[in-house]
Image 1 (cartoon, rainbow, N blue to C red):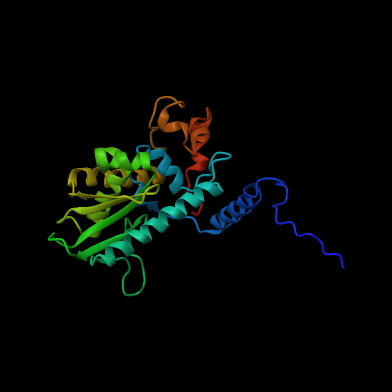
Image 2: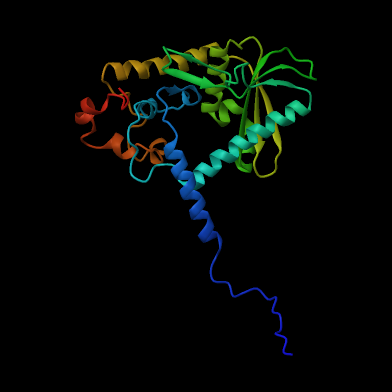
Length: 265
């Protein structure tokens, strides 16, 4: 009887398996993202964005420049960030903080104003806990890579990310949680370190952010474009914008009359 020898050596590598699987996953993520309904409102989480024209374009569902849609890698980053938020909630609850995220009907806590044209959804409201603080207060959670995490540690949220800072303040204002400082949290995606910061309410900044949102809505109603954030298209603030080409098109101003109606109107 002839017995064939068994060969447990791995077969010759015919290529990186990642190059096969990752594109399939990314394609599915992009397809799923395109099926998601688009917002018909200004998202309060981004109202601190320095370029109000960008926010106006987003509100109007203006078509992005070619190649500027979210790719699979970006969508994976978004989903990982959401998972860190869920972990943050679980860790706080295990530590005996009472974190509320949804109402009795199962809806995420949030708010809308200006007849629903401005909306926001909060990560949580902490109503009690093992630390002798004044309750309740807003809880907002973010994740960051190691470099950005260290920037939050050294500078605080107001300097490290003014958009996040504005988000916390506007959420405090519209949720009626201004009496006690919010708890801002960042989780390091590389090391799982955690950074916590108390953010007192700043009425002046919150009012400025709220007014800017109203100005965007008024601009749309008046068929006007908000001012550009920079004087030149090669500005750092414009470099990676999804509307850079559209915004700086030589004929942009002449075409605005036909483009300034939201696509759902």
